[in-house]
Image (cartoon, rainbow, N blue to C red; front, side, top):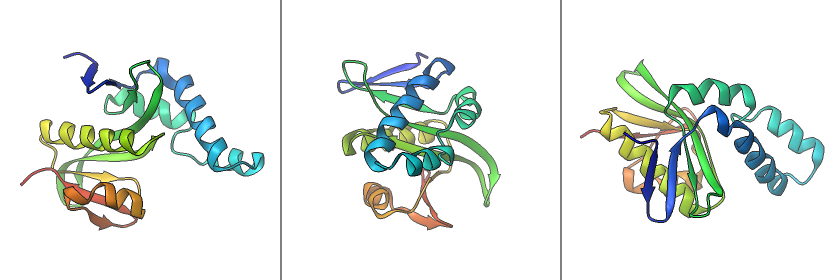
Length: 156
């Protein structure tokens, strides 16, 4: 199996150690737009799930992906790991963090997460937050709120 999956004009790749600097730059740029104040931005970055030590944990597990446009520019990524025997489920995917520059990239990564989970016979996916934008993006998957997160079943 290849690490690159072409879908439409975008490329999906399993995150690797070599991607850490690119992810950190991507997050810095995203946070600069969201938090113009330098001090607040630095504080938020320190507490982000996409900080360097988190990336070094999730990347070797092989369940985290990035999405790039046709020119190779990073459009988003997610950090994830499988959990066994969690909350009554035998196998689920825990998505720790999902960040994108567009709704189209977000929706494409959500579709990838869902397809990957079904292909690997996981029972469901726990997404990182229950904010209304994410709930709306997951509406076709019949999301269920779960302790500040969102769960979608991937089996029937």
